[in-house]
Image (tube, rainbow, N blue to C red; front, side, top):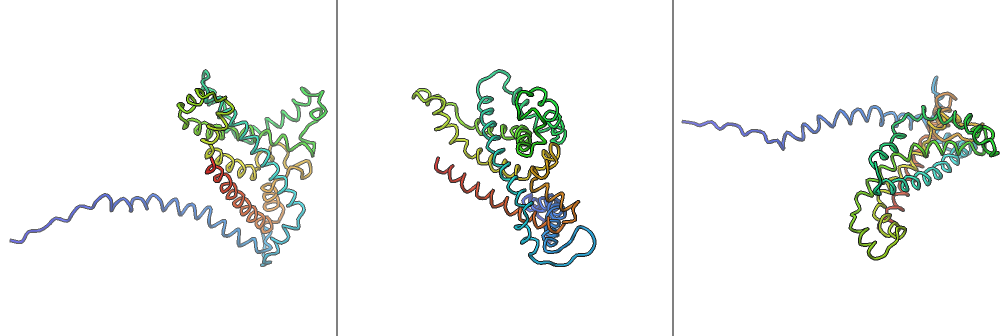
Length: 297
C-alpha cells in the first residue's frame, strides 16, 4: 500500500524575505516617487531655459556657467558659508559646555535636560517672530545706551546676520546637547576616578579623556550642524526676509525666490544642483578630516 508523504511545512526563514519585501517596497516606491523622480526631473530642467511655465528649450550648460558669473549668487554662497561656520562653532561650543554641566551631579538633572530640549520642538517660524519682536522692539528700549542696539538691529545690513545666528544657535543647541549627553554617558566613571587619583585637573581630564572619547559624537554634531546651517531658511524668513536688501539672503532663499516667484525655475534648479554637490563635498571632507582626528586620539 502506497504511503503519502505530507509536504514539509514552510520554514519561517523562507517566509521572512517575502514579508520583508512587502514592508520595504512601499517605502522604496514612495521615496522614488516623491524624492528621486523629482530630483531627476529637476536636473533635466537645469539644462533648459524653463521659467516654470510655458515652453522651454535646451540651453546646455549655460545655466551653470551663468551661475558662476552671477554676483548675487556668489554673495548668497558667501553669506551662507560665513553664517554656517559661525553658527556651527557657537552651537558646538555652547552645547558641549551645557552637556558637561548637565552630565555632572546636579539637582533636577532630568528636568534641565527637558528644558534645554524644548527649543528643538518649537516651530521655528513662530519662535522667529517672537525673536523679531525682541530685536526690533524690546532690545532698542532695554539697551538704548548701546549704539548697536539703539536702533533695530534687523535693519542694519552689517549686523542683521548676528540676530539670525542667535536664533539658529538657540534652537540648534537642543539637538546637539542630546548627542553630547549620549556620548558623555558612554564614558566609564572609573576613568575619571583614576585620573583624579593621578592628580589630573578637570581641564586635563577634558583634554585627555572626555573629548577624545566623545570625538565620534563631536564629528556627528559638526557635520550635521554645518549641513543644516548651510541650508538656513526659516530663521531668515522670520527675522529679515533676506534684507536689508540682499545682505542676509542665503542660497536656499535665493533658490526659492528665483525659482518659484522670479521666473528662474531652470536657472535656480541648476543652482540647487550645484549647492547639493557643494554640501556633499563639504560633508565628505568633514568626515574625512574629523574621523582621521578620531584615529589620532
